Image 1 (spheres, rainbow, N blue to C red):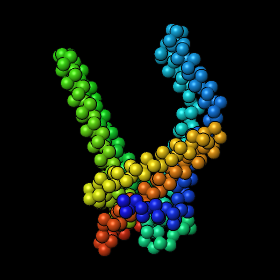
Image 2: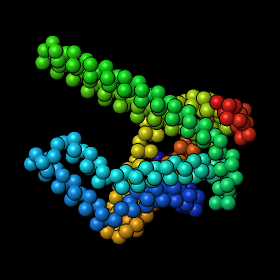
Image 3: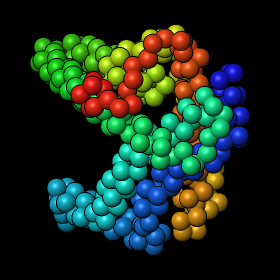
Image 4: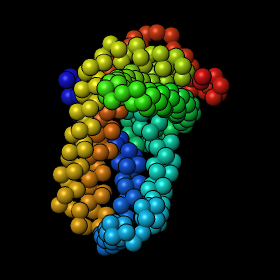
Length: 297
């Protein structure tokens, strides 16, 4: 728990460094939650009315889906805009925040003035990391989809033999689903030090990926437990804050977003602290600051 304690001490000492991350979380949440209560209530009433119409046989389930989607279209548009804004803000704020935190851990003399210098140094790395991470998880999703389809065929094939075999197929599918889920969670935590490796040691993306697995394996269960605890703490506090302010437009959204953002900031501090402590800083480092995108691979 030493790392967690030190991460919170760092937050207290360098609270201003979390401001960009707070902005990154607050703005998309404001956009997504900009639908007023009256409009949301009206949408809910319209959908309930449609559900009643389906029950009475006035409209078909297909017509219900089309009409419900049309009613919820404004919400989907806001969600899409919020996600685009989040991606754009993250592209600039996340690498700069990692850079500022790492600089503060090294020199203990960092402030918001370092935002743009650190952004210039880390944004190339973050783009390469984001592309590599997306491609990796895309491939994993394809593999999981193939496994899921095969399990469906297995259950259907066994169901044609007998009900007992169908039950066996369902049990196998559920167990395999649990195994796949746990494997995905484990893989996520094994790669949690991927970008920190690129930030701290200037490693290229593939070398950083390997280094992340090495560091995560040496501190796996504490990493899982502490990062999960930070996430739960942020979520619970956000929920508690949101309840009394939910009736006040925007105020509840803004206030409840702050704990979530601070939890993300503490997580960044934690993973950087762990990585720095678990790796030797006396090793020869790759000079990745001025690398081209090809060289970062």
